[in-house]
Length: 411
Image: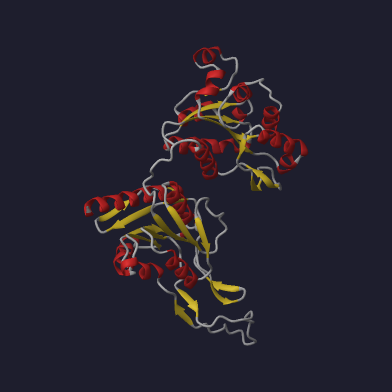
């Protein structure tokens, strides 16, 4: 998306704060961002904070003589590759549908000849109101694209439903897709490669209602699958039980147990790159009960005979001719993180191990950020803390570089 430019119109909703992260992520991807703040938006984010992140002009007033002389709302509306409205409030959607042009935001929208993407955010009852539904339908008929809203808790106490602003990764995906329309398809670092990712926990049944599992949200594995797809790969994601939506553009296979995960991962072969980010349960119950186990009158706990689960990383790292060219495992530890990761890399036959400290105080398990150490045959790289999407993209970029370098060396 390098050398692209968008105009981001920030509407007056509590979700406007998400636009600060959106601007940062767009800038990381080489996209220029020029922002327009409605009067209401300035109650939630400041021109100073927006300008600091965008490193570009922040416009607020249709009748600002300096801005009109230097840029002008007509020129502003035509120079961008895409106009994005986020959050698109009920009022802003209504004014767009009505063709109003009584402030800078609506004047830009009325004057543009470029694609427009809106990201609605409002109270669920406002979103479901017939007037809003008419306005959204009218805008869709005019060719305006829409992303979201999402369902969840609202800022108002006791309010929940459909109306939350789409999360930043979903906004980025929609923006990238629109910017890519009609453009030549770039040759991305993982284009033409098949990547396997395992993610999430496994659930090993004790009886129909109980199971053995690890604490894993699957967020890091899902982020890796998205990053690999964004870099051009064909991705197979084998996912244990999680509550995350399937990544777009990724083939997701849902499993419950370690045995099922091994079977699905094996079926995905051959692949050039395999990333084993799943938190697989080490043990399973030998004979899971067919009915719920009842408490005994004596109060003694039931005896559970355990067996070791298949080691998915070790098994696929030793697949002979079908072994992936680059095998990356994960090591979630609570102590001696790097020492244990080095031992794991050798004992499992992995090329790389991504190690992290998952002690409760770190907040990594189930959180949105991660601090990892990349352990390779050459040594250890300790990365600064970043969000899991950034960890994923950096890891996949490194993997792509490694594959290309090995191919060049083999020629």
